[in-house]
Length: 333
Image (cartoon, rainbow, N blue to C red; front, side, top):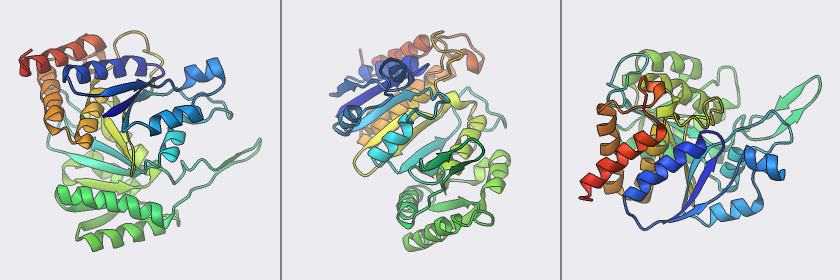
């Protein structure tokens, strides 16, 4: 496997090395290619991401990505939107499940759902007009974009409980009618049981009864908001991994941002980055190694080895080292 390693900005420079340390403990045959992207590079060179960076990432099988700081500068080119579009990674996958020893806002451990978010269209299409008195962002919903995200969600649903929730706001935003219709047609064609929910209603229901849901498919902005909100169920954004999947490439990143307020202090939670690594291994078909990472992580959390955001005092490096130690013991090292 050829893997691009992108630390990015802020705590990305701490959590990605922690995840790579865990990856190295698995002793796999992986060629790691470092790629510098982000705000720091933009400050130094005037470009946050270049065509050469894109070519390097396209030459790799997948990408392990940290976090990016986005300044309020209209000339700054969004790194994430650029990567998603250039590599056509149309499906954003965010699993929401409880972790041992960590309590979310409801104090429950009986939920396990996945948000499948369309990743290249909607309000993140990048078509904008910024003016002094008025600014506009164009929301793009296409039949093909809706179809392929629905196809992915249905495939995932059939591997789980064969149930799909389609989230939209077509009662107000008429472009959502196309998304809803295509998702319904696709689910019917695949024999997947489905229901639809308005996004505001879905937000409420996820906070009240998350155990009732399994696979949720929605548009770009709604998926972004619902998945971040769902971090409260797990215990924080520092615990949420994600995958960006395309037909040829895949990109794995923690959901949290660059957290400049704690960057450099050595206390950033590496759990989301390490769980993103687990998703990467699963995507590549390395199921044994993925399970080993999950077992090691669960063991460390059960021992209370956690960063300050979870109420303990361990550093980023100490959490990663504990996971590595567990893996080495399992491998007889």
